[in-house]
Length: 48
Image 1 (cartoon, helix red, strand yellow):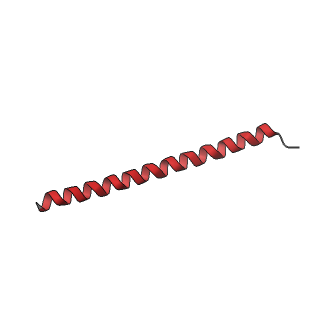
Image 2 (spheres, rainbow, N blue to C red):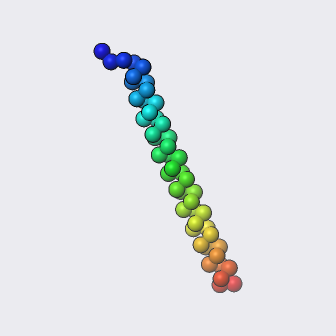
Image 3 (cartoon, rainbow, N blue to C red):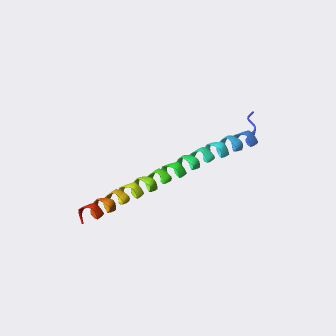
């Protein structure tokens, strides 16, 4: 028989891993949007 507490620990560890991956993905998206915005704004400043 398997221990239900052990399965809960495995599920919590898997959930934690997915949450970290989701947070890093969201952070990467925000950084990419920020960099693109800064590049576009700085390009407009140079041409005007």
